[in-house]
Image (tube, rainbow, N blue to C red):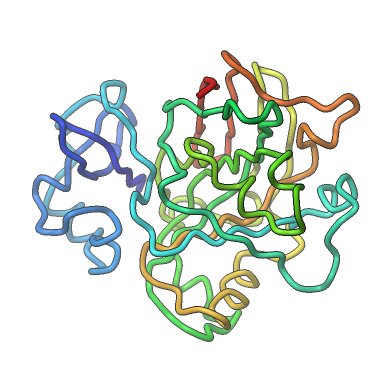
Length: 281
């Protein structure tokens, strides 16, 4: 199923896409759980889906998307997790995942603007697969790691390269407001099939910039869960953003950065397409 967070009549809610792919069931209106994160934590998604039925409450085309998980306790991001990206940056390869963090208030939903900050002209794209933790845990083994996943989504880790490179720490360049695109929804693993075949394609104004499959990750989904749960308790609704392939704008000659009016799309097959138009602010 495809679960999403959205606004309806001025309130934040959550639900799922109907079987025909054109409607949304407002499960939040039928639930005591206040948001998708809470429903995941209560292991309530299957029950909510069964009780809500498949009759749409509104059209998918009419909703205002929120980040798939609006209030994650943690957003852990894997950097330099594709060999091609390591090669184009000249970094990575230490044998352990490179992990940095994003803040929830830097995120925005599908079709919301991506903001190129007025402080810099170096806003770059990074199409990525995101995994959402379902069952919490600490020191999770690689063999059991995927049992802790609620589903998978799409992330655009918009990066202000100038600020990312000011020191050895990534945090400022990864947390400008309106740069963390997350959506349009979370697809449960039972509908995806072979996770290694998940395919990322990033398009800037229709031109393909990045393309790779999950099988090409240096540290796979289970590796990342096991590693991150070693140093922190993973909670329901936590997000692990699993890394971007080669082809980022900063590594191109000449560099390609995003600006006012650009349209950036990240498609992960079979999950869907995450789209933003760039504004300056």
